Image (cartoon, rainbow, N blue to C red; front, side, top):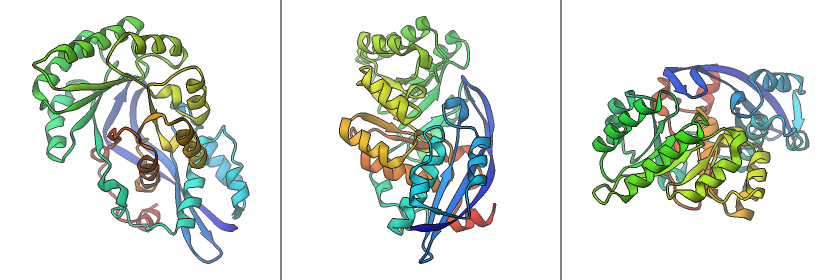
Length: 329
């Protein structure tokens, strides 16, 4: 099959800076891809790199798009190299959407009716002021960034959080690889201590990527020493990393960011073959990549874990259709 290929870059400003151990992030940049087949059917895709997380850079993705001809084939799309995982995802999801003749209106995705969502809280004390608004919007799982400020300060905020959050809340702590080994032990001990406290029913669901990617063996050891679960994130950013960690013995939680992991078809094959415990998570994409990511989550989530796509409050503009989004670029 041959497709007419078009692309348009975009920039979206966050309502407030997203602060993580990687630094401050103010503007989300990406590329919208449109494929039109010979019958006029349209497939939408989105390339949403996060280079510091393990994907290609935006410049590399733009260079790749610029060197492609105006007409491309399935073979070209399915041969995008592994060094361009965000491009693999964007093009292949556009291909799938076009072939399925998917409904292009954002709010009509049936799987979203049975997926539950985790909302991202801001780092530091700001979390104390925002969780209630998100709770009123229906969220019951929250992710809070740690490893951003001094651990003593964050533990004090954590104490306040667990005493103000409703008891049925699930809380995820995301360190983005920013803890020392001693700090990781302290957070995991804190989680175990909370679990042992019979007066509290609030649960730390997991601590996400406590140590750097190069400290895989230490995270494997820590996962065996504490009841509080560890989830790998930066360590499994791409399909190659995902497979490598599995081969090295990781059987805990894998956080999968569909927008940068690589080929959706190969991701399906891996998840179905190995039956991993996966949490699907946003890369601050527009509604186009969000739809493709949620479809994968609906297919491949095994343990009813909330998907980490509760990020709408980080942007002002919310699109009503893919075509309008395209027209506004």
